[in-house]
Length: 213
Length: 226
Image (cartoon, rainbow over all chains, first blue to last red; front, side, top):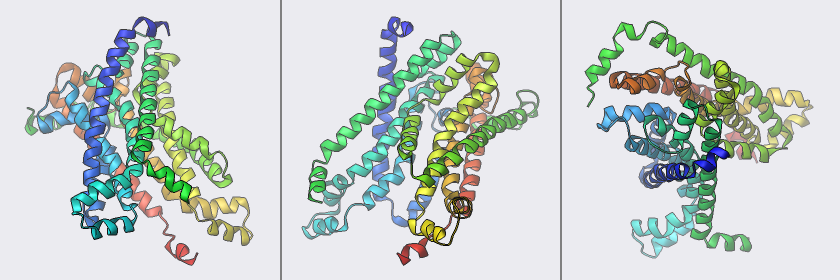
């Protein structure tokens, strides 16, 4: 506790970096996952899911350091971490996003079609809004693991909250490690609450339909 | 940029395979750490998960544990345990950290497996005079095996990904080449080690996935009857 109070500025800086390194992959990854989930035809869904499943199994540190050889980035720095975490978000969200689209009631789609909506209009204005609860549920799972996984980026030189683990271990300051654990946990919870709230705001009708039932 | 030839060269250099920090030794260390933790975690989590699913009590606990566990950074947990237990007990501390990491998914998988069994089946078994023990051993466990193995699969992914970090606290495992290579800026070693880890992890994941498929029971006929 004493350690944390003395190093508030450091913790703040690391938290900001940690947020960036987690939020960018969450945005990029979820957009790609949602796009793929809606666009991949049914007969390819199994193989896409299998490929993403294998990707998901790759240990994060191994993926961070394998990317430079594949795409020519630097070994140290946030780019590999952001790309790797985005891939994990895609892998973890693809299945639940497909599910979310499949759960959209068929009548809603028929009505949209009957009203003369183009496929893109239908996806943007009907399917996407109705799939939001499922999509955000998947995003919440991805968000928690992304925030905690991002800390491993510290091993490849990203100065985020994971730095507290490495530094605390080397300097034998247990408080520093505990501070890191606590800070990451708090970020994950705040992000989770934020997504829960976003779901409420984006689906104002969901409350009404419960009342009708 | 690193060429494939450099990676091959590193991989086919016999000196990188022999000795204390040779690939053979690191591989066995990697596997021993991973599998002992998963085995112990399964011995703890499967009975509890099955009991919770069977009794239908304590479900909220399983859900809470599995969602909280996702937000805990494995690296921090690993370092904290080694720090608190003492660096001389790091082998034990790592195993304990890995067990803690492996329990939530196996617990969730076991619970979900039992929970997913249609009520008609357990009721029919009871109507045939099965005791609670028989019900668990002959009905619930076989029907939820695939789900339990699914939990083990997620545990495996998380455990192996944490074992890669073991060299940071002075232990071995296949992550050694990554950590040492990064420090020495030997990127052929880093990449070759990463490739080996990727290959072995995916292979293991596929094997567990295969076991999952083998044990999966289709209940389609039962669903139609209802």
